[in-house]
Image 1 (tube, rainbow, N blue to C red):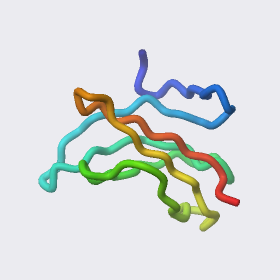
Image 2: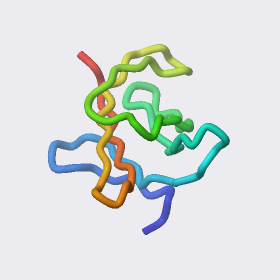
Image 3: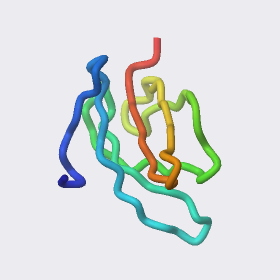
Image 4: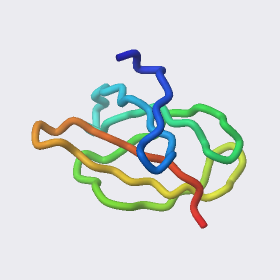
Amino acid sequence: MDDDELILDDEGRRVRSPRRRRRDDASDEVDVTCPWCFETMPLYVDPSSHGELVQDCDVCCHPWAITVSRSPEGALEVWIDRAQ
């Protein structure tokens, strides 16, 4: 599957395939698309992060509802939706 392919989950939330790249702080990086302004940007996720987070878009400043999960092997999955 292509890293740049846009995917929708069962609830219609935008999902991007993770692009796993290690940085010095061992974070994971995924490219996400803002559900408000549709700009694509990298999102750095701490390896210990999981669950639901809220973060503002760096471009339009609207809030995102971010859901982070990991497979038993540690593969990162990130879902981005508009926060209410």
